[in-house]
Image 1: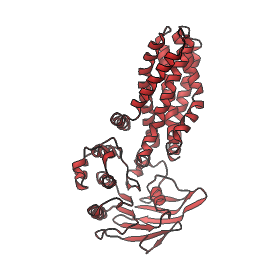
Image 2 (image 1 turned 120 degrees about the vertical axis):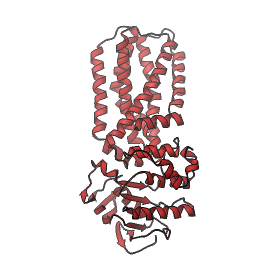
Image 3 (image 1 turned 60 degrees about the vertical axis):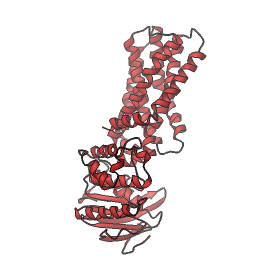
Image 4 (image 1 turned 90 degrees about the vertical axis):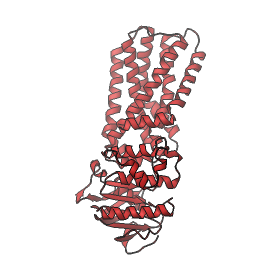
Length: 214
Length: 213
């Protein structure tokens, strides 16, 4: 129900996804034109995640801020719904919106730079999925922490980027390896990303009541 | 019904509420006056379980409320200082969402909007509403959610004269229905509101018997 409401609000207002998609497409075009022809597959993986990361952070900054701006944080806290459920709904929204972003940007980016997935498609998709889920979890938590702050648009990326480094590294290694067709230490990096995701989902669920009061 | 015992709430080093004790009984209307910054909104937020006290306790039906008791929130209807509602959704959709959020069927939303005078605007996005219309929507929300306690922070703010009279009638009806009602207000309530207790909040304590801000 909460996710349905969030999607309805997003669909009606189009305040997040439409503007972010435009920005994301522009970033991809700029990267595509700026990258030298024949850019290596290893570099292409990194560029793809850079193109995804910044628009994704913009989506996540708005997750709770839109609730706070409309006075809805208090309204939700006054309802007989556990804080963990509230966080979970925003996490799911974050994952859905980031996944839409990835689904639009990834093929566009690969076409522009002339790359294809030469390695196993399953590994490529697993890396993308774990990356999107991890970004969604970090974003849902930090967005809540900064929702009531005046400088949230600046603070949110400042906190999210260092925290996402292990996830980002894993995602780049998996994606670059999949594009080049020679993925290295796939199991290790997928495991690291999986642990990252589980940790950043479990921790907020455990302390959701504290996060809601910040 | 809802009771605060020796409530202490701090903002930084300052104690906003200093050992405050207040009991809201079923079928009674309690009115709380106080100057700006006296802690009225803090008290309402704490009683409404939107924030936790640094000391003391809150009891609902004689049982101590803990942060884990989310179900207790389902018994408390609130009108907060600032009106709220999703601007992109219509009034009807907002009411339906809140009704389901409180575990109720979402029925009676249109009737509630008719009662508060918003039926003609039921399908309009809430972002197009004026301040008074938003306040009326807050009152409609109280009507569709079946709760035992009403905590009303400046419920007359932004309302025109008929709106204020209507809000007064609603409080009287709630009292009749056995709800415990706490109204925080700067301005006198309409004459139609039967007031059982009047308190004045001063320096973090409630003092009985004084009226006016």
